Image (cartoon, rainbow, N blue to C red; front, side):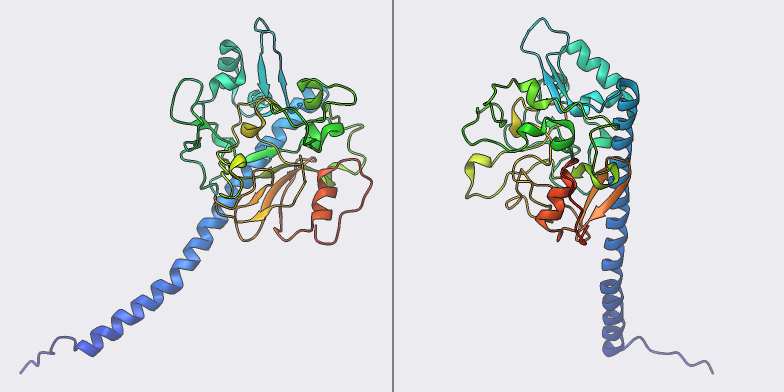
Length: 311
């Protein structure tokens, strides 16, 4: 005679549920770590592409791109040219570059999202756009195309103006005297591999990650509503321009919230640190615990100082 086994008892069912819950609890952190590692690798691949594009620009022009160019002449063929714009032809962005030239300025294509300019770790951007604040694009849309990567001003700009003067113009943060300087003079670094990197290209930061949208703390309302868009030429409208290595030169913030992020600092988007591209084209992860002294030495291509042991 066949014996039929009864259903699970309540205790057995609770034990099974508890085991499943424990397994899920163990699995989720591992899945999150894998996803974060994959996103970090994707972001570092973007940095690599951008750094190689800058080197290809150097091969074509015998210098690295400058921070940007602004020609106030309305009849000029290029009234505004951002750093990111200049490298577009070298990262398969020829169509965007041609469209910017057709319209007359790089900021007039501010609706164009460039995938290589956006980190998958950057939660501040929505589909690559700055949708908060007052960042309407040039065509009247709901957001400008942002970027998660800022070029080092001390490499691509004029280091004479690397640290802002509080009395400087509201349009740009370079020191205007002495001598008086134009926007383009502040932006023009004209860096060359042969002469501009006495500390070595492998010891100098070219690009670093930062949030595309960084409204900052409520206690500093004058620095709220700030974002980084790839289309604006430095130093035209600095609150919208992407850069690092300008101003205080403080090291990356360790995973700040949008309410606590500092627009003038890079951001470490993972607990592991902040990804940077070096001027030799390599990419590495820098700890968010790096000292201010070591970080500033890595930003300066010609200070003659040895990087600290925390590099």
